[in-house]
Amino acid sequence: MLKSVLLAFAAAVSLSACVGSQPFVSSRSEAELERDADAVNRAERAERAERRAEDREEMMNAAEAVNRANRGRRVYILR
Image (tube, rainbow, N blue to C red; front, top):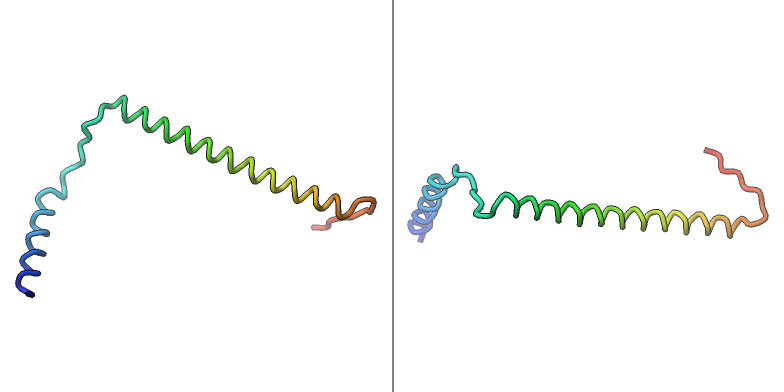
């Protein structure tokens, strides 16, 4: 049992040494790669814009809640 495990491990190590240093060569064209990268960038930009809009909405809701709670009273916030 141990002998077969060691043999399998040695085979895996020797195979990884043969192909481990070879760089990955994509079969896709440069234009396809750029198009995919642009699509990812657009999606990330849209996600960040959505997150900023949500954060702004939360901030405005909090400010509105403070204004409703303190309506008609002078409140000074000291930092």
